[in-house]
Length: 254
Image: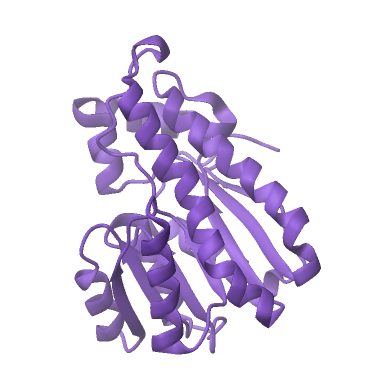
């Protein structure tokens, strides 16, 4: 590893499994101290980081609860002395019922909004004081190909990820004066536990269709996204803000 994140403190939300766990591990390998937050137990993530020689703490995080988000930021300060990077990865995805847009359960619709959209707002608010004081920072929001391509029968999920892109662009303009960069990443379906849950018994067919629609014809794996996250967290991207980077094997060209 190249130590691109040496000396930085990174918060990763939704870090108990899947992409969040991979982001935490790979960023720690690049020298970052990691705060892993999730409503699930992050012990496995913390153990993986420390076993690889990195530094990490786990916190219980409910992104819909502002007090919980502030406690996450406090943990970063008490453990590592600051906050340089926030990866807004926590989202509802696996387990969503979906269906025709006019048949989506209103409670599920509101829950998706609360976690996938309000959660990004809450976590960003929790860290922004520290970043403003330091006159630097990087917020990385995880959107989705669903927002750019259009995902039928999951309107609430696609809508929430489109909102993430809107948040990214508006915050980038608002926070630039403080040298805080805000970008998003829009991946295709990544082969995680959440994707298994989302597609259920249609998973194999979904994987075929997704790969066939890409220029690079294989399914996205968790490791395929880590390099982009590290780039946006590092000083290599210090003049990049307001952007949405597609990591989708060539499904959508912007």
